[in-house]
Image (cartoon, rainbow over all chains, first blue to last red; front, side, top):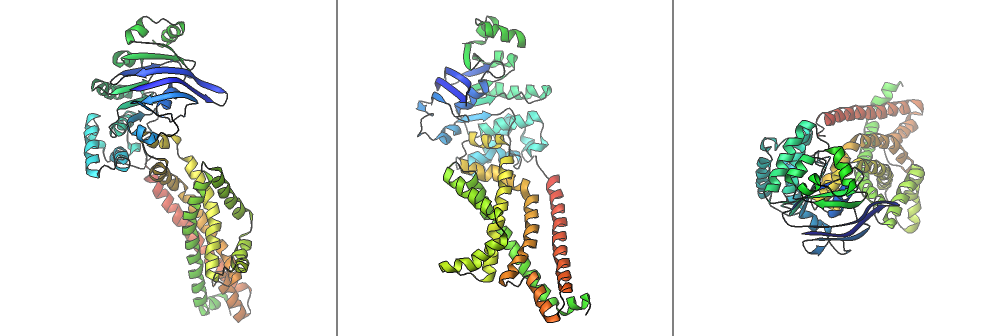
Length: 240
Length: 219
């Protein structure tokens, strides 16, 4: 579904990604782990071109999205993204946050968009918050709304950029629960996270990144129980 | 005649003056608002030529006296066959002048909106223009409303220069009353008080408005 070939990203002289190759299949849940500064967030943000790659090619559903002529807006409709800082729109209600893009981008009638939004709010357990503003929500609630907002575009893949890193510990569970449900429903997901327990439980494949490269990949059992690369071993010994 | 007598006798002059002053200030800020927003978008454009035009506009209008700008528009453009009435010239000058200041205010406001907001909108497939219109601008305008209010107050005061080209604003009316009464000081004191009342009321009103905004700030 997504193919990444020799992806490089530099900011001036600073090289963040030093050649990443990966293939992600439909329905797969890929969890990216690694120390801070390893380039995992940058890698994720390159997938929907929030960061423009310096070189390399990304193909999504058989179409190169890194080509000059490609309309990235159309691709982004099919790639939902959830951010560490939630990034809900503070001047809009919960319902408006969710329905804005379907109405404006997909030209969906308001009634239909609201129906989808209400279904999603039920899924994330927040239907009673539809008229609330983001400032009235807890961090965990905000992130669940952010997930619902991304899902409202009916994406084919969901990208999660450290979705629980800005949350108080007691709110991490509710967000992971929603993500787990999503994975069980067959959604293709790429998740950057520090939640190792979650990675082991939900991930189909674990990617360990360090120094702008993929150092090791495999099933959770392989990577967590029997890491091959010394850097992986070192990292896991610190976080587990 | 004492000052109250002058005020009462020539009240219709002062009243007309207030109308012109307020009319010009409202036009200046309203049209300057729209023009200023366009200029601020120019200044942040990806295209270098547009950015340059925006910068020249802002720097030139902020770096030259408004009186000079007024005279160029009213007297100078005549040599190109462009002739405006006094009130038109006044309105145009106040508009372009306030657009330069408002453009800088908007730019600060737009750049002050968290980058994550635009990223979230773009990640949903919204175009750059859509993101600007629905996500960034509403938040930017809200955060710069107090600064826009200050610009309105400034324009009320600075609009007094249009009396130079014969627009019947407050300043002009003070001159007219002076010509009739041979009294310099009192008409000027009267309009000073009127200017002060207008700006003071406005700043109080803005303060109230600002507090309201803060209480229902949904951030």
